[in-house]
Image (cartoon, rainbow, N blue to C red; front, side, top):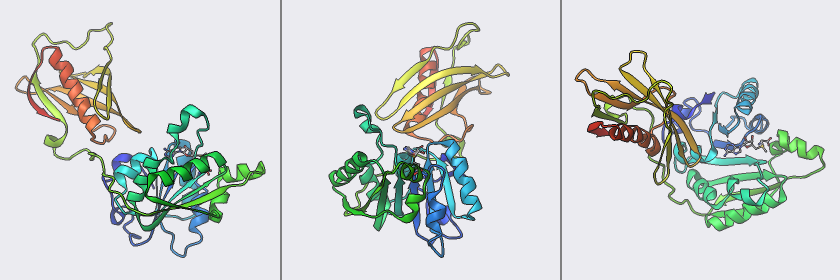
Length: 326
Ligand SMILES: C[S@@+](CC[C@H](N)C(=O)[O-])C[C@H]1O[C@@H](n2cnc3c(N)ncnc32)[C@H](O)[C@@H]1O
């Protein structure tokens, strides 16, 4: 089953995600590629563990979905997200038995090391989300990244590093086969938490049912207010806060001519969302600025700030705010 970010709870729980098999172990695979690991690995169990797979590539997601479906693996959820966001916001503390990383992108250039997944903050987050006795399993052909990851695990202060042989299924992935054909071998490490640090979940929640809880503002606009005139493109605006950047990209007029929709690009760490913020006329002549439900936005500090950025832009254009709900 494919989940988007808005299908999850923050944090989520196995009885909700896997209602038929909630008592089974829970495995997360990061960067599953075309999905060959899990059918091979699951075949070793009489009852396949619950599986959560995270990938950045949409094409890989569809290939893996087909593979898992034809293997009859029903207790498997695939999602297209940065792994860090899934682990931090969706996985509950102490929820996972195993985190599997097979042949992660090595980012070999000197200036690109910060793109590597397996750095000390990742190991702290992983230790927080693993059960006691759980483990991160790394298999890679890249010796330099392997040493880097082992050192990062030690530097995290919360992982014991054990060098062992890889699970056989890790040698059946697309990249494993590619490196084997080139005569290269893979290394494997098992990282087990020595402590479970308290890495908190962020201030993230789904779009609420109650309109009062949707980030919004009410304001009175000047009678002569026109946000843009034809031929004069909307001027992009950027706002920055502690952990977020909001760029107001464009503005669209409603065909009813009594409102507009602003398109905002919101970046928070690895999480990027494009959201719509509506500006609609109310019966009393005031205007409501509110995050639109379209696209299933997840409400984060940055998304609230996008509503704030639209409101502030309208204030600069002569609007008078009577209520702020963001
Ligand atoms: C070298 S490929 C290995 C794929 C597969 N594990 C295999 O062994 O064939 C690395 C994969 O990790 C994915 N990836 C990279 N960074 C990621 C991240 N932050 N979150 C989720 N997936 C990621 C990439 O899209 C890519 O498919």
